[in-house]
Image (cartoon, rainbow, N blue to C red):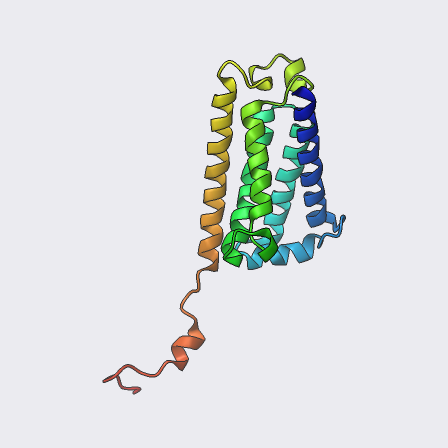
Length: 190
């Protein structure tokens, strides 16, 4: 089981490290900071540039913590929240859950993996275990407690961010539409 948890942690950390570098540097076939900032802006995460930097910082920090198995519940919550925002944003923007159609299926699956690590702990091959921290093995009830905490923190962070993005995308009364509308019956243009 410990080898499986180590491999799971390393895979998740590698994927999210690459996601961060796609956004920041354009590595791994990514868009780079300026283009990604426009994408974030268009999806309601504003200001776009700062939100890209924040998302990337979360991915890098969470990845490092998960790879090392250091303060694993914090790393899991950071990654779960960040990926829940990404998945929720894509699902709302595209009107579908499915990855094939541009929805949030893939980042939401990554969020799920991070939450699972919150419940299981990082395993014996981790800094947390070497330090004797209770959540390292996810046993004696600590796994359930830390898992629920990870889930709640991620849900709260994602909910707040998605509400903010959604309100940024709500169409305001467009001045052009108001000007083009015919006057109401009985109204004068005077």
